[in-house]
Length: 196
Image (tube, rainbow, N blue to C red; front, side):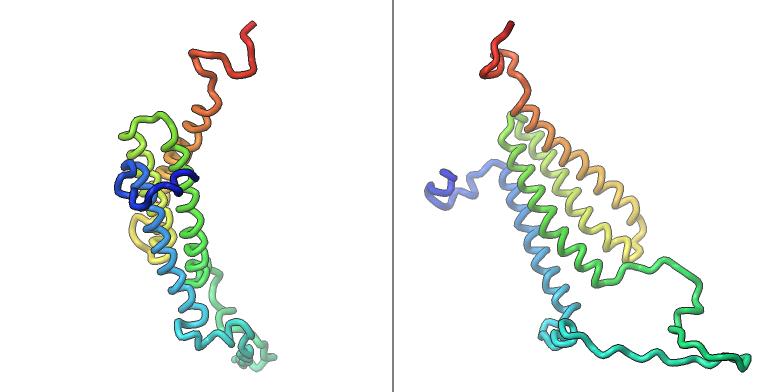
């Protein structure tokens, strides 16, 4: 907190890993805000013209009875009842909602882990590589559901690559600070414990 009491305008003087972490967080925030506008448009419209229907509900459309060709009884079935069962693709709304949630949660997680990692004794070059890899993994992981929904070639590989980058980066940024905080120092015994 003391850092916030000092003279303003020191962002340019931050270390490269800190600028990388802050920049990634800000870029993800801007993407999240843009996605919020898309979600708003999908739900109620940017002009809010569909807000009454969205929140109060719209009257249901009646199901039309389709007469049977063989003269038997007519059943009120939806048109898709005759179609063979197939996997239902995720709706655009659900994809927007999932992306919205992840765009505001994953970057915060990345930012917190990056801060803890930057406090450690790891060389700056390795910090840049690990934070950069985790940032790239986060970005690709946010893109992966859209790639799959749009049937991009390599969408499955994108999940694998993004998951690997996230897994390795987040694990490294979690384990290294924990080790540095709690591993016994080779030079001195832990405070409060005496050697036998």
